[in-house]
Amino acid sequence: MNGLRRAKRWMGDHLVLGLGLLVLVYTFVPIAVVVLMSFNDSSRSRNVYKFQEFTTEHWFHPGSWAPGMADSVWLSIRIALFATAVATLLGTLAAFALVRHRFAGRSSANLIIFLPMASPEIVMGSSLLALFVSAGFGGQLGFWTILIAHIMFCLSFVIVTVKARLSGLDANLEQAAMDLYATEAQTFWRVTFPLVLPGIVGAALLSFSLSFDDFIITNLNAGQSVTFPMFVWGANQRGVPMEVNVIGTAMFLISIAIVLVAETTRRRQAKALAR
Amino acid sequence: MTSTAGVAPANPHDIAPLPQPQRGRRLTGYWLILPAAIWLGLFFVVPFYSLVSASLYDPDGSVLTGYDMTWHVANFAEAIGQYKVQIGRSLVYAGTATLLCLVLGYVLAYAIAFKAGRWKNLMLVLVIAPFFTSFLLRTLSWKLILADDGWVVGVAQALHLTNVLNLIGLTSTDDRLLATPFAVIAGLTYNFLPFMVLPLYASLEKVDIRLIEASSDLYASPIRGFFKVTFPLSLPGVVAGTLLTFIPAAGDYINAELLGNPNTRMVGNVIQGLFNTQLDYATAGALSVTLMVIIIAAVLVYVRTAGTEELV
Image (cartoon, rainbow over all chains, first blue to last red; front, side, top):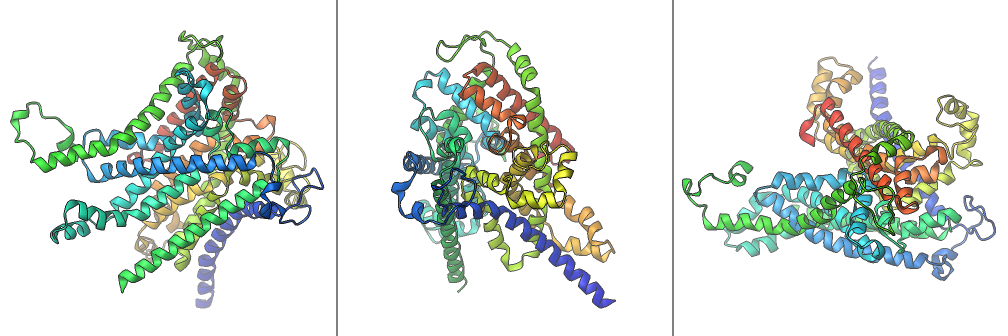
């Protein structure tokens, strides 16, 4: 009886974990396909939805890429870099204001920051387009209008991420620094800022990937410019070139590497602190 | 907290002036938030005004000749009348995908929060990892996976799953998965799953394990304990996750375009087409505003029913 109950319990524990792992595996199936297809030689057949023959050509000879793809990747990188820089700066300042300062209109500010995350992208994108057109910029859609849109939707995510890190901070640490005669500036740069930095870096990475990956808002405000997601969208109409999967795989590998490096440094720091 | 700082006194002489550093700090708050506030004001709040005015333009205008503001409220009636099928479909697809996300996401979040042990952090990273490969490429992958001659379709046929799906109307063409409502809903479920898992995990993580133990001490079965203790305590996560999944899914058109067919078009596809190809800004604006209003109304009703008003 006891053994049966224990077996039942073991089953109960491991069943949930097993099901959870199954869900996790399911989320990686399409990624496996992206990786696989980045090695597909599709030149022999028009059927691009089937694995034909193994090749590393797309990985090592960017010259073999479909025309326009390299330009679209470069445009997406530039926009993501600029958008990340501006959104991270403005967002971090705002997060400090919201956590550390009391002022009138604070709760309405919080609401306005929440709204972009809760609005459908199609509505945000179309309202920006309506603004640009009614302001007479309808003919000049491109790099700058994309950048403005991307900074706008990255801002909320930066503010929320940095805010979470800041409000989790132990105020005693800053108090202690002040007690030890550190000036306000010294306290900020030697204590507060280093402690908040992981949150800021996380927010910047999130911004970069949100900006690099955005399609819906970008497509409405891009005019003749073609970002990487727009290139994929256009390519889909003609049959997707396998090279796009190289970019997808590279994005995945780079972000995994960054997360791993961040995690190991965090662990090493935690260990060093504990010692 | 805002009661002292936010409300201006009726007569400034009634209370003593604040000490200097305090006042300096208060102004710093404004200066710090000003740039972000200006950006969001100019490029998030003001555009809504433009969108609403675009929805009231005279529909006879065009981008080239310019639009006249004629307060043409009939745009709304026309847009809704013409595209009610797509609006309804968007809500049904997004709702179904949200439910599926809730089931799958809950299992995963529960496993991470209570069963993963020292693998917790790794599993959390793995939840976010797919997020870093292009949304479009992942969706295109499903096109390959569900392809007509693929093994997924083969297995589904062998198990007579396709017949079941046909029966409940999720697939209309026999023995196919791609280009059906099933594929679109599957794509939506897949793409928005992380938005469900993370809030669920955050709120399950906060559940005090002793409460669950107490319920089992009081002879509640694990299942009863789950529905009486764990699930109610995770409600804030359920509400947040549902909103974060449903709202973007209702406005999405990528899944419907890549995985569906002309009969699975959602309201997002229509708005996109009206803006980008047909350049009918008046109808597109009206449709966009309608979508937003429906979503806000749905969110308010849902949040009120779920009973966690403090969330929004």
